[in-house]
Length: 296
Image 1: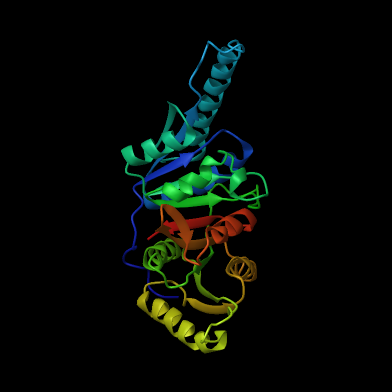
Image 2: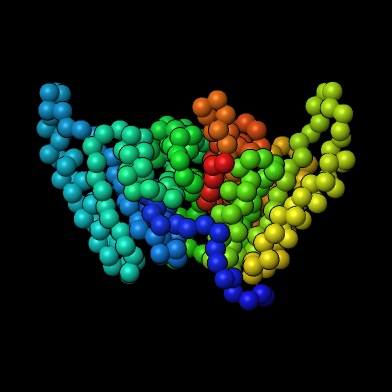
């Protein structure tokens, strides 16, 4: 083991946690609180409330819904106060659409990270916050930590990332994503694995996959050598095949507690560093650990 790192490569000062008070949000909460405590960040717990409309036929539901919301907010504040001692937190209830509210709060509070929980088992369209969660990933100006539907429900209150998998295609988002992976590995004294997936060749490709492997190993080695302050020697992995499948396989084999992916903008939408947006969707919806996506 090396001497304690003298610094981290990122700063988390403000974290936004989006909740709808569902079981999925409850599973994600410890990740948000743990990161806030470890980095000394302020945690903003945000809930988007549907604006009241007493012109609707079911106007009698509003007092009931408001009373239930008030109860849930009170219970959440109690949990934050009693279970997470010393945590600087604030619960914000804002009227409006989920996407608009989260974007507004993230901008107002200069969020460094947004944390989302999911339910359902069919991908991003089944986020607890509805399909707007996909838009949050597309449009967020900061990193997003997504706790997917296959994450265990019995996580400890103080979540520990012992093994982190950073997957990269060496694209524009790689340095930013690597900075998060390294900082979290430092903070948690975690083992860090660096993964690059070489896709199956397409018709007309002049360079064969085996010819790319040595170059990929070398570049991953460069990444590892740049970060001499890690507690453990990074592990470089080169795999051949379908990116999402290989990322999930590597995460399972390495027993990863966190997957880190870089994403970049392309024609108004976020794309994974491994080309199509479907890679992010597949990894988040199938991973048994949280997935951190970091923009270029």
